Length: 429
Ligand SMILES: [Zn+2]
Image (cartoon, rainbow, N blue to C red; front, side, top):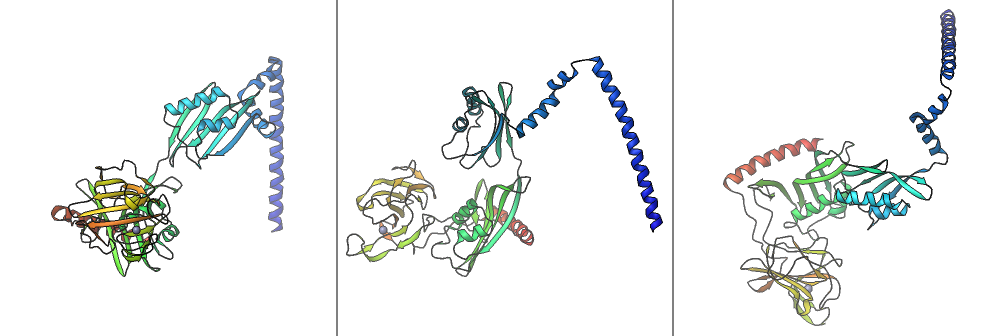
């Protein structure tokens, strides 16, 4: 053992000696070369000072000492523009003007609050010059601006996203929203999910702790598997009121919608609750009027909600009235067909383009929650009139959605089976 070790050591010394010999040989060679070159050209040293390599080294050293180059990271605030941001760093006006006009021309000037801007400047006398600028304009697009002498090169980069399908589910603890967030579902998918079930489920009253939901939808991810965008909901299911309701996305004849297992469309002629995130605060029936003080039949349903909450048309139809009306304050009524009219009171303001005679689709924003007219606080007063008579909107038997038939039904059955197979596969992951 010892013998082997000694032999190894001897070999090691020999090896080091060999390295040293080589090193001295090279050293001698280099010294003679330098001497030869110095003789050849006296200002060799100066030319080295002017070279690119030296400038790179200089830049690096200066950066770590007292460099004229500075790098900033800025978080965009509300109402910021690139121009405004650059002014904060005392960038010279000619640079700002050049960049501002170029990015407007190229439609790359939109920035959004919370976005991070990276700026590299160079100080010259009293002014700062832009060396480079980097900022995102949306979730997948960013802009890189670099100084090239006295001009700027502007390059737009769009992230390549991959479509991915996911199935996420959860049991409801407090409310649908927080349980969906806990499951990792993006907020816009939650809103879409609530819209799809808006005709079937009253989110204020039907949901109990322990109810479950599942959603199968599209995500768009970047190379780091970060979700940058979401696509459509392919399938959604809820277990509420001891019933399971599953809805499938189906497209036929350029029309897209959600249908249950029997091929019945989820869209009914009228919504029960034409507002999201509201609480039913007073139902249809006799009550002591909060302002008049005596018992009176409340001929509508009240939904308490924050001022400014959007109010939707509960069905498609034509606007009958969009103006102040009696104790209703700002008021909208919609004629849906020969039987049904709906009305909405106490709005703070009307939705864009909402006026008498305008045709609206179901879900269109017709106004915003307020407290105008005879009202004690912000709420929506919602009425449904059947043949001119006010009825209880929460108890009405809604005409059901259309049922797919013939060719459409056959295609739906095939598509539904495909979705079920994919679902089973994705659930296993
Ligand atoms: Zn009311």
